Length: 330
Ligand code: COA
Image (tube, rainbow, N blue to C red; front, side, top):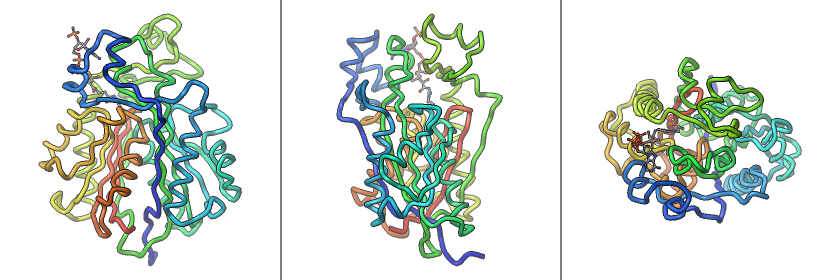
């Protein structure tokens, strides 16, 4: 029985300066600001410059998270990066970030659970600290979706943006930190959201236009249905595991894919809007970076109070979903 908790010691984020508004998208594809706001809630997204490697966002978010934890890069024992848009398959994003921030004592590897990746990475990291194997773990969610979007497809290009979010995980007093987590995968539904890499099936080739083998494709309405149901179930599961009720939760930080998905899940749970963190109007869907970027925004604006019960919840490609319930201890 361990006599300590495993909690978040620091948070950080990076959003590129370049902004793409709904008005800009009106000039690129057959869409309108009115449609995008009504159907998704999004108003703008941040985009990387073509010449900047995506890992630079993660390195910047990591530096801020380490500083917020009052640590130095040399204190980090392990780096886990969640990404579905790596700059290279090797070196991994975690090794690229390790080099950039000079975290010379750290081991490093990547995790791909698409938009649920941060929840997966946090759950993995928790085990290493609980067992005493490591003391300080840096978790970065680093996503450059603009690199794999079909900019001629209004079905997808209005939805995504680029960003990175980071946290440092470590030991905290035993009444704080991660209390429960839940992970699930549904490989049989994977065909509903795909980004080919080193191979593409004939079916997936046909879904895309010629010369667009590497772009993201999704069946929006199938993913929508999965998202509302799975987000609500994931929240319920960790709340039940923690032996509390939904009324005891102070803040839910969900993956930011569509305001209608968030509202649909909230309605199923019977949760008021003011208990849910929403940032997608500023960021669009930034995949696994959404939860840590929103967490950093809430942390830095003082919305999180010591002792608050917080639920992180996400769904995404795979298909995957997962949730974490924690007691905020900063
Ligand atoms: N601008 C204007 N019209 C658009 C449009 C756009 N950007 N994108 C789609 N449309 C049109 C469609 O072509 C369709 O027209 P039609 O009826 O003439 O065929 C109409 O709007 C309705 O399309 P539909 O797909 O039913 O829209 P929707 O309300 O379901 O919204 C999504 C589409 C993609 C926004 C929504 O399904 C969604 O958010 N799905 C989940 C996706 C997701 O979360 N993915 C990431 C997982 S991490």
